[in-house]
Image (cartoon, rainbow, N blue to C red; front, side, top):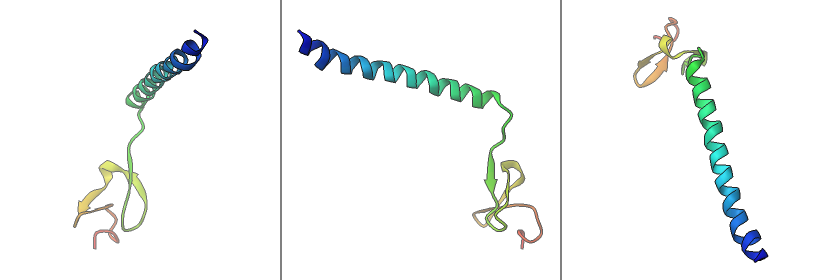
Length: 72
């Protein structure tokens, strides 16, 4: 009987509890990210400066910023 509890039920309970806790933590992280005002940043491929994704545009398949050196 002890083998049944220690060898079968305990690992199943461990993975079940781990799954539930992981799902709860991931939902907390997702809701915190959705409720924050943090903007997604991307890197200009010419000058390597990080800018808000809205400030970059695609030119010849590459993300570049609006600086004159990058638009050539």
